[in-house]
Length: 549
Ligand code: C2E
Ligand code: MG
Ligand code: MG
Image (cartoon, rainbow, N blue to C red):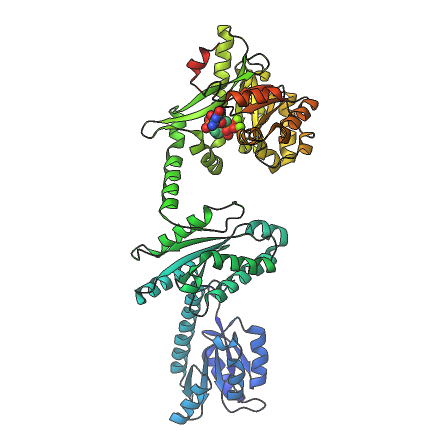
């Protein structure tokens, strides 16, 4: 059985009160007050549960109209419907009651059935309105709810066919982190503040909605003042950053050109724009345009087929030889993957690796590449070729996987390969990411006999200081770094120092991307151990590589 709704009867005449209670108590739980003051006290205690007030006018201590005036200035109490019970049913009585904010009135003497019907109607009306309200507004921020935002935007567009509009999405990028570090309350406060400042930038007739936890949408008129986006966002940012530290806000922008696009879809697009710069330092907003659209469609198309491609062995492992500078002999190779797609043709890793790193597929592909390399190594072993170590690329996502060490160990075991034949290239930026985890994983891999190469050294921010803490065998100098250094007069280059220092720490040094004879000679002069680059050989299919033995 559902609980009875609570109502409040305010009436000084005891007999009338008892009679009303009697009539009403079949359907309602009745609270009674003998004057306005008592009624106010009861309301304060039960304001969330009282569905309706029946109010007499003439009462001692505080009369009905004084009571009503007090109730109507309280935002919460004002929502409770009030039926005033007047002495007569003159127009005068009715107008006075309604002008004080009564929802309805009934004349005395009481006619129970009429009272009950009017009460039921008013209660239902108010509950429906509350429901609508809840549906239309976000409770925390007071912005429109997502659904209602869609509706409001559509209305505004239809009503103003000549005005140009932009949908802007604001995304607090590190909100979860903020919530976790400062607590829920602080998180809520941040959201409320963000919503409020967004409303104030937009002004009176801005339409703002809360799309999801930390994402807000708004519809902006495209006008002179705000059309200079660079300015708008930098202003917004300087204002923000003064208030809250460590909050990263990203904006997506969608200019409405085709109004027939459903608003939901416009919002999806503006979100895609905002998400496209996730994690990009110094990039605060992105505009949804054909370029972005094309890029996202391409990424999606790739993501749709990547698993099939792996299962169908469309990924081919190429090998690029490495040479020793002291005697020009081939000393190993790097495995570099290519994707030969049946329709799209040849794709270089620059096109898909960054995407796989983003969408989480990279560990699957890397595993596949490592296993292929193991197969080659065993094959060469069986054919009696000289020992030729091959290095594979290990992504930072791989290092985060707790079973990386076991995966690699089991793999070399399965193929009967000495782990020292499998070199692991770990990119420099992974080291700066999460040094503790990297250091311990790399140490363990090293202990198990794998040879560790730090890839792309010189491209990022790793300090020389850090090198001394790492377990490393080989330092692989980044191609761009080498090219920059070799472009300087020898006396100004730090290449010499880096290589000497690496040798002092007993690391060997590989130079990558060597393209000319001059570069080779310079590298030789500064004591670099190995080289890899187009000047010597390009990455090639395994069959071609085997011909080099
Ligand atoms: P990386 O590991 O630094 O590989 C070296 C890149 O330099 C390769 O590009 C190679 O082809 C290119 N290269 C070598 N010598 C020269 C040269 O003389 N001149 C020029 N201009 N380039 C040269 P590639 O094959 O396009 O690979 C690009 C990147 O993709 C790699 O950089 C690596 O980070 C990633 N990658 C490739 N294969 C894999 C893989 O199987 N797994 C993972 N996780 N990443 C891979
Ligand atoms: Mg590499
Ligand atoms: Mg490299």
